[in-house]
Length: 232
Ligand code: DC
Image (tube, rainbow, N blue to C red; front, side, top):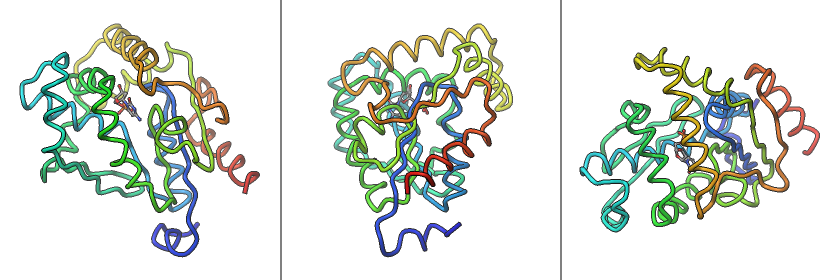
């Protein structure tokens, strides 16, 4: 298809929102879809992870909401997005490689429940997606970040399958974790993401829901392409 530079010229391109819980295959699918369309891939979880990284670096407790909120005005967060990998620049430093550790993952889930953090990240995300031609992936893209998105997908999958997928990814990345531990972490994160008061994880009423339990990523992308083509 068109390359992104071409897509981004002229008419405003589409905004495609993909939401869903951890381990459901969002990142893989969003990246593949962005590649197919020549669109930008926006991994919003990486932005929450970056704030978690800073909170950890500053030695703050995730319960110390006032101190975390006070960090934000003096923070600069930029994403150098591409269809395959996004580099996250926090206060001028590329921290991309440090965002997917179990410690940052757990902290990101807690930090993302803080209203001041969500509010601060809202314009950051909207600015990246402002020109359209973007596949944005997260928890509240279709409900809050881009409620006007042209296409919304909500991915779901059996929790056991999600935990197994996530465990496989962690082991492949060199983390020595047990499957049971991964399951517990995932359940805890799910619970926090769904029950927080601000922008909880939930499908937008106009989202197309896809159960990925027995679908490989390529099949999910094919299905999405069919939905997108039918809607255009
Ligand atoms: O998608 P991820 O696992 O990289 O996200 C990390 C955390 O950030 C996750 O626990 C939920 C939170 N998050 C969020 O609250 N809203 C988003 N749009 C994206 C992520």
